[in-house]
Image (cartoon, rainbow, N blue to C red; front, side):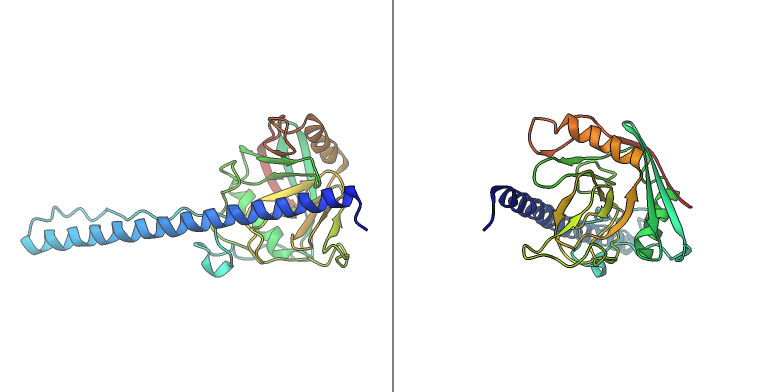
Length: 263
């Protein structure tokens, strides 16, 4: 027999997954549209160049370039459709790394085990070294059913990313899924967001501030320190902008600086 709390958590998880899927579909449509526009522009540029050459009126300026499609960490349902390659592996796979986030609501330190999640840690290291996370906002707070703060999007609206995807890792770390198809992500867990499809992680991640049941399809790659967890709990306590249970946090969380270093 499913009680009201279980039903509420189930509905929240289903809503979370539907939103991820809708966003993924919207980004995929936008990507296809941009590809078409880019192709048309390329044809126009090439046709123009041919015309100039045929009448000998070219001014020698060949710097025109067709527009390129916008990249997103979640725009593609599979790594094969990513517009950029995953960063070359440069980390020590047997080491522990620390992702330090200096935010407007307090410092958050995240311990990451490269042995369990080498692709994820390597990607975060490569992005942080480029100052990718600096001055970005944590765009989403959920306070009903599931309890997470989502960050890592340079656009701040859930659609941005590095232009490539990474494979899922460590999916069995939290145990076997129960009868409801979920596992418990303990408070303090840090995991990758995705489109709802396998191997579609990019730069977005979520910070779990209260035990949360979700399907075991999100790569758990780190653990917040106590200070960081308390900072996220304070953000959650302030609630969601507009009074809903899912949206931008009322307390704006800006990642002022994000670094990843070997512990």
